[in-house]
Length: 179
Length: 201
Figure: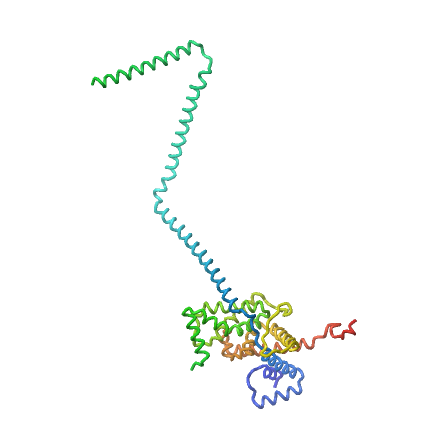
């Protein structure tokens, strides 16, 4: 029998036959290495079987339920984050679908916006120019040094225009009364 | 035929499934020591063992609806603990843990007194030193065999191995433990440490 066979017998759990047992004992008496390994196995088994069970520090159940609660809260937060993310993705998909539906209308949107912008810019430019002209007439013109005659003619024409306007309005109102 | 303990377990599990938290507390109290001990033997320190034991019970609590009542509850819960510890060991590649750095609580059957307690501590240290020589799965097999008296079939079921693989792993584990102990015993003592105090000066 080889040395390996004896080593297998030493470390296996299976019961040996009486012949095998006798052969092993005979070998252990002559082989110091196998004898020491055999003794080691026996002492380890004894140690493992007798060292006893370790127990957790008291309050294990309380710590367990605290941990379970913390874990539940963490899970809830994670779930909420996932739900929010899914909702956002859903919203984006929905918006994409809606945009697709209005694609034909949206095609005109840029030209519509540019028209409105042009209108607004035009209006602003018109009123700015008008303001500038009025400012010039009302504030700057009187400062221009013209001949006194020119000013007299200007105011005379203005007065004549005013008289003409008033007389026209009166004629019109008399006609309405007679009719 | 189911024995009384298994009947009680099945009843507790049924109550937990029905929403009775108190029944789970009973399960927790019945198995906390077994689960903690397994985790401690696997991981080697009390902090990691506590963490692993709690994680095991959380997993068991969540997976209780999947528990097959034809299976022994102890095998099932220790299987969860073993797989968790193996994962942790693989992640951390825990080589050696100094048990002086991390204190643990041992619960002897009788009060051993100060000298006996010191002896127990030394024995616990020796056990952990031996177990750290083994691979994760071999360590689990040894722990289940010697601390829980599991049969080969139960170990195979817990570790997801075949019966012959369990036999082979146990054989290999015992041999490597014996050879490691032999190697340690024959290692020469460092200079100075083996001398008596008066001679070392």
